[in-house]
Image (cartoon, rainbow, N blue to C red; front, side):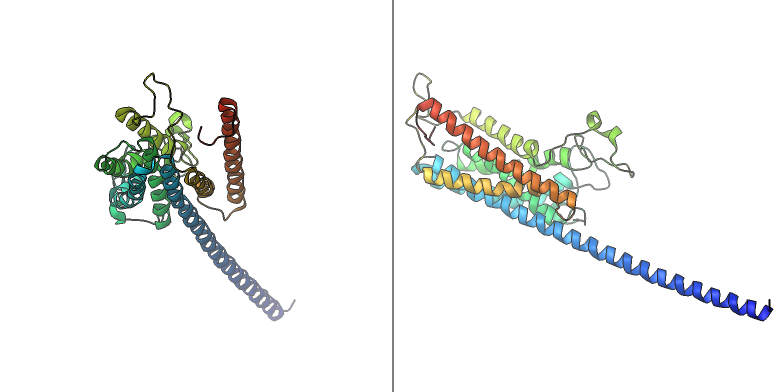
Length: 320
C-alpha cells in the first residue's frame, strides 16, 4: 500500500485509541468518585444509626429510674432517683476525662490490659469517633445503674457517688479494653495487616460479646452482687426465721410497669445498635434478626414469670 495512506491510517488508529483511553479514564474517574461518595453516605448512615441507638440506650435511664422508684418504699423514692441521675451525670464527666481513654486509647506504647491515650478526647481519631464515645458512655451509664437497684434503700449517698465514679471511670473501661478494643488480651478483633490474627487470640477465637452480656451486664451484675452482699438485705425484707416477708413491696406497681416497658423499648437500641451499622444488606439482616430475638426473649421471659407467679401464689400477681 501507499506509505502515506498507511501512515494516515496508523495515525487515525492512534487517535481512536487515545479517545477510547480518555473515555475509559473519565469513566473510571466518575466510577471512583461515585464509589467514594457512596462510601461517605454509608458512613453517615451508620453514624446516624449509632447515634439513634445510643439515644435509646440512654433513654433506658428513665426506665431504670421508674423501675427502681416503684420498687422501693415511698420514703426512699427521692434518694434512689437522685442516684440514678448521678449515674448519668457523674458517669459522663468521668468517662470523658479518663474512661474512654482507658477503654479505647491506643498510644505509641499500647498494652493488653488498659488503654493509655485519648484522655478527655484530646487525640480522638476517625476510628475512635464522636458517636462511638456517645454510644459507649450510654453503655457505661447503664452498667452503673444496674447496681442502684441491688443496693437500694441501704447505701449511703457518698459511697454510691464514689462507686459510680470508680465503675464508669476505671472498672468498666478496663473490661471494654480487654474485649472490645483490638489491643485487649481477650479481644476477638486483633489484626495483623491481612485480617484477623487468630494466632494471637485466646483459644484462637477471643471473647465474642456482641451486645455487652459480659462487658455490661456481668460487670454491673457482679458489682451489684458484691454491694448487696456487703451491706446485707434491707431492714424488714426477711422475717426473723429467714423466710421472705411477703408483705414487703414497692410503693408503686404503676412505675414498675412503666419502667419495664421503657427498658424494653431501650433494648432496641442496646442490642440491634451493637452492630454499629445498618448500611449494608448483611448489617440490615443482623440488626433485624437481633430486634426479633430481643422481642421474643423479652416476651417469653414475661410469660414465664407470670406463669411461675400463678403457680407459686395462685393468682396473677406482679408483686411476686
